Length: 110
Image (cartoon, rainbow, N blue to C red):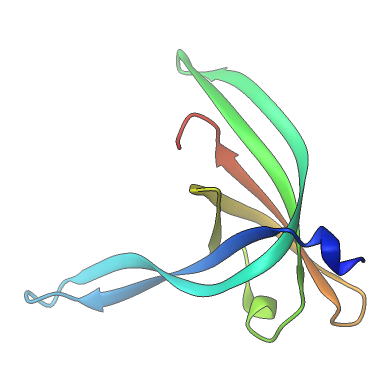
């Protein structure tokens, strides 16, 4: 892959928890890595669910392999253009060359 195609900045995040003053868990998303990616739209879907119209955007992001990025899985998420994406799948391309991440975002949330 030509490095010039990695022209989008994405942030990979992972759920983390800490304890508050009452010893209760507080969950948040911590930045795992900020990387350059190629983004390819895969699917735009709109369907009805319980009387509400839902629009989803599915994109495929390709990033360079790194030890940190190799730990990404569907429990994590990514942020692109201010929108949070749920990770649907992660696939290794080549021998530790690239990682392909398929992710979905609700279109109506900024």
